[in-house]
Structures are given as C-alpha cells and as structure tokens.
Amino acid sequence: MPEILRIASRIVRLDVPKQYTITGLRISIGVIFLWFGIPKFFPGGSPAEPLAVRTVDALSLGVVEGDCARILVASAEIVIALMLLSGAANRLTAVLLIGHLVGACAPLLLFPSDVWRSFGVGTMEGQYMIKNVILVAAALVIAGHSGQNKSAESQSRRTCLCDG
Image 1 (cartoon, rainbow, N blue to C red):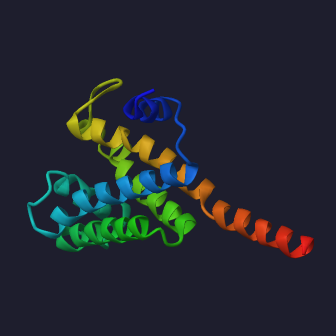
Image 2 (image 1 turned 135 degrees about the vertical axis):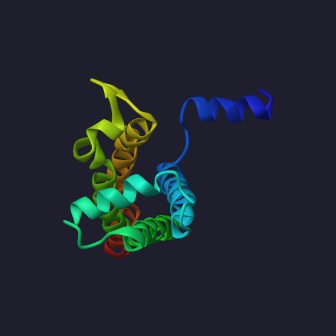
C-alpha cells in the first residue's frame, strides 16, 4: 500500500495518540484566544468590543466600565491563551476558560435584543456566542485529560520499582 494511503487510513481511523489530539485541541484554542484577545487592547480594534464592554459593565454593576472593561477582557483572553499554549495548569486553565466563556455568553440573557432576531435565530453576535458551547466542551476535555499522562507514567515507574 502506498505510504500516503497508509497515512490517510490512520487519519480516517483516528489512529492518532490521545496526547497529540489533546495537545492540538489545547493549542488551537490558545491561538483562537490570542487572535481575538490582541485586537481588544486597541480601542475599536475588535467588532465585539462594544458588547464586551457593556457586558463587563453590567456584570460588575458598573464598577468596571469603558477602557478598563476592554483591557480586562483583552488581558483575560491573553492570559488564558498563554496558559493554553504553554500547557501549564490545564485544570486551572479550563476553569478560567469556562468562567470567561460564561461571561462571554452573558449577553444572550442580558441584552437579548442585541443577540436574537427572533426565537432561536441569533444575530451575528448571538451566533458567535452560541458557538462558545463547543469551546466549553473542549475545555472540559482538556481538563478531563490533564494529568493522565503523568499518572500513567508514575504507575509505570511504580510497577518497575516493584518488579526489580
């Protein structure tokens, strides 16, 4: 069988080690968060900025507003991105990611006229927020698999030590 068909067959069968798939998932979400976080550091740099600022203002009961809200959202997204890209503290990262995404979806309830055209039909902003459900699921997968390689490795060491 030609090599390219062998590789394609492995991909189709999903014969890829779990460590690579989780790492790929983690890195791809990190890149997305960088991609959307960096523009928020610049006034008017993100089309999501007005809604993000209004949401932080509403959730903080007016304590954090305007440029502070914009920079807070941008900083949170960059911190989460860097944690995802580094692979450090995956469970903490997943908790921060889920918390951030819950806040990012808050306009679905806080500002329904901005995110819903009619029942079940979202505006562009609403559709953007609804897709965050997949990011929450991905965060749960990352958190669920964090530490598994370490525990398997330590189990392997214990077995070797007991055998010898």
